[in-house]
Length: 114
Length: 115
Image: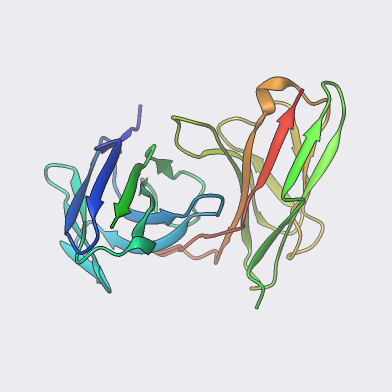
């Protein structure tokens, strides 16, 4: 069964610090991996999309890495801000084309404090 | 562009009642889908549509119906609400392509409670 596991489940960091969130997946064959940010009470918003041939992708202070050999991805947040407090969801697609076969992780809940 | 809109934002139903969750997008996306999000679980696909007049079941379709009469709208119907359908429902849309990049745009969600 295709699975996406994220760690840690939750994380508290001080404003200005960096952090790294992890995603391990068993989805095969693999097409692309996405990271979403979900603010409390809102829908998920796409941060990055990487295909199997891409090792890293940045979006501002967010940098995602992908190791397709070990089936691992990470999301690194640099110089965290209070607005980074949210859940971060890793999503893996096993197919090209339409997005009907996405497998979602349960997310890492990040809290950034003063 | 308003993006993906959903109504209502909150809803409380009694067991056995029916209702329709509305979803609309103004980006001319062909692909639309409905997910439910429950505590401790990833988003799960309920139904999806690859274009007007075409719908298909996702991972957890039981108890839900959909239709797609226009490109813009994709309503989700609960036929006879059950407490197990208490959840947050998200509608999403994306461009239908044959490539690997299909960024999904999510609506703000509908929080449904069934008593």
